[in-house]
Amino acid sequence: MEAVPILEFDMDRRVVVKPSDCIKAQPDIPDACVLCFPHDPIEGLRRAGRLEVIGEHSSVMGKHPLFSLEHQEKRVCIMQPGLGAPLAAGFVEELMARGCRKFVACGSAGTLDADLARGHVVIVTAAVRDEGTSYHYLPPEREVSADPAVVNALQGVLTARSVPHVCGKTWTTDAFYRETPGRVSKRRTEGCITVDMEASALLAVAQHHGIPMGVLFCAADDVSGECWDKRGWKECHDVRSSLLMLAIECCLAL
Image (tube, one colour):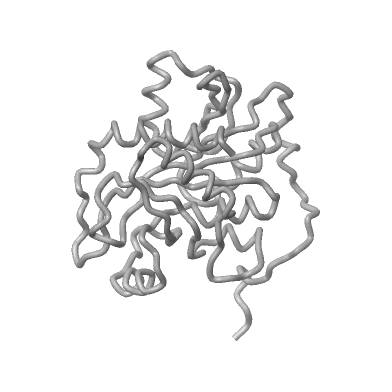
């Protein structure tokens, strides 16, 4: 059988379309950027008058504003990077073209461990690459690891804030309607404690470009059993807002 195209890794760093062809550098942009996948925490800060719009990115879905927030006398960018690995990775490329140089992504993730309480914070240490984007940034491997220095920095912030947390591996998949019992069981055996749609691609982009990237999750719905348990995650607005503020502090600490 001929190798599938996704395994045809090309080490050539020359590209036909560069992010700088689409996005121009901003000399005054904060170098720290938080990618916040849930929209409601960002909306809460916007309604409170704490966010300044400093740019926008476009996709076929419309406009994606880029915000600046002042926190502890420092500035940080905040952006909602869409859903899924391809769009999130593309936005990281464009944010780098603007001038951002360190990133923390935050959001919710399904849990593969029923004992992982709803809202518990997870620092991603590695991700199973069950998506396509990462294979265009790194050679084919089953997993991609987070930078240990970044993981330690995130742990330091959470420990200083007395935030209960665990460090662990996530399963990144493109197909959230194809999380079969067999796949869930296999990922649990591999040591995965959460499932998401972006982490492995974000870590791969970071490794490719040599930039720090941290990933923080809150344990949300439970997919570890025979039946899906929503666990009332949609109503947990305060938990998501708290996670965003933690991600901001973590990003500034990198």
